[in-house]
Length: 162
Image (cartoon, rainbow, N blue to C red; front, top):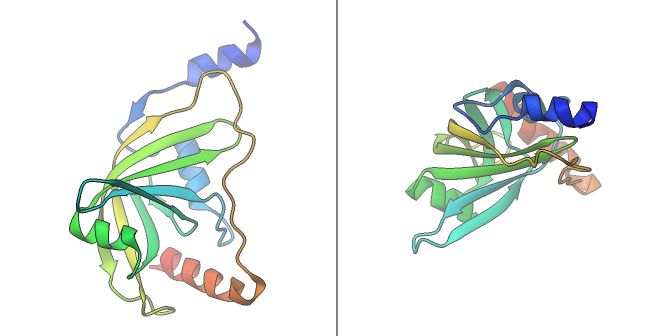
């Protein structure tokens, strides 16, 4: 067994009640970053799973996440009706996790955008989905168009500064 494989074996964990330090660090997203994008999964009224990408999601503490969501988005409707949520994160070199939690609206209207709300997710469980051997080469990324960069920076600032 190589030295790298051995260290991966020792640090592999299955489930945790909060974000492990390496996951928390990635979701703190310094400098108002949008990347990495997370995939947020909710449940439609008929029980159908629904996923959507979010660049605004960030960790406030190891047990609390926060994101912005448009009032007309299926994710918003689903989380208002049924707060169950799962968040998927992939980040180099070895983070692949599913975060289970409960969401709630904490600000119905954002200052920067009256059509969007701020939601918080109480982390209930973090599951390690990373294979023991392998490397995540890239995270999901998003770059806003030039004319909307200030909007995105302002929205992220409002989420972070609450």
